[in-house]
Image 1 (cartoon, rainbow, N blue to C red):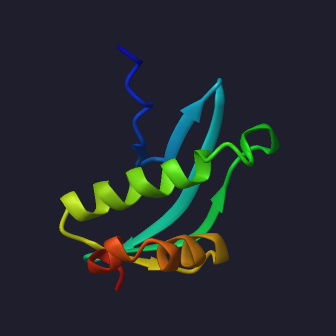
Image 2: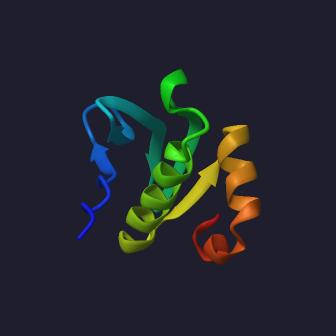
Length: 94
């Protein structure tokens, strides 16, 4: 049985969602305003780029935001593009 994927965690103190893979952290900064979560920046270390880590981060972040009955306001160009490529998450976009 393969290992479960690493979970996306909400680092409330740093105001960012994080995904640790291979000892490296991909993250999405956020600001909460009521039921809105604005995402101005998503970043993956160079060593994780091209591995799908940023996409797994986005998937986990969207699922957490959905579970909290909130909406995402994507500002980061990567977040905007990712959400356009994944219309199944349109219900979470403000």
